[in-house]
Length: 200
Image 1 (tube, rainbow, N blue to C red):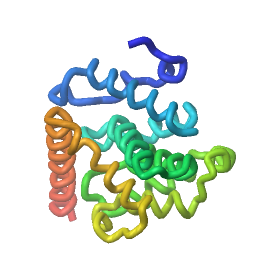
Image 2 (cartoon, rainbow, N blue to C red):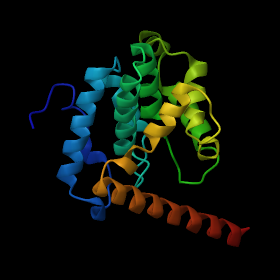
Image 3 (cartoon, helix red, strand yellow):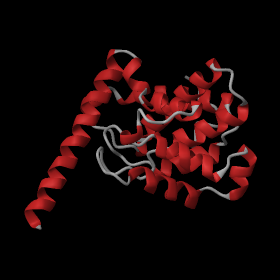
Image 4 (cartoon, one colour):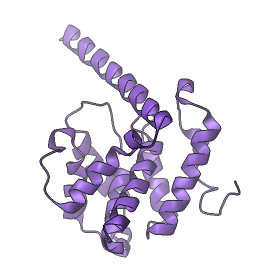
């Protein structure tokens, strides 16, 4: 696959994926396809995507690959609903940053932290260029909180929630990746919780 000028500066090798999650070349190829799709179908800039990558953790599931997949799925769902380019830009922006600085699966404040980190790294000019309002970004990032998964009523909230679960419907490899990645993160969070309880 020939690299476009937009994709060649993304540092794919910086991501720390566990070897059991599949061939590294497959992941890199899939990331490049997702990145090209996002750049073609939204007004998100390359620099915003690089900022998203900087904030992504090297978790086994909640990582840059997941963020790109969520963004791609958000676009596909929004296009199927004939949503405006402004709505698509908002959804993609939220998808790219909804798990920024994600610590572990069950941490209650991850989405609030993701919102704060997003607002700290993005400029007002970038938000104005995309016609994204701060209150809409916050509402949609918080909609990805697991405890709110089935309580949100708005169309954009439902789309970002569905897109956040993109890997569950992409076939056996992605389903396996999701299950192993989430279990690995959950195991780490349980371990961390037990250690904290033992030390308190």
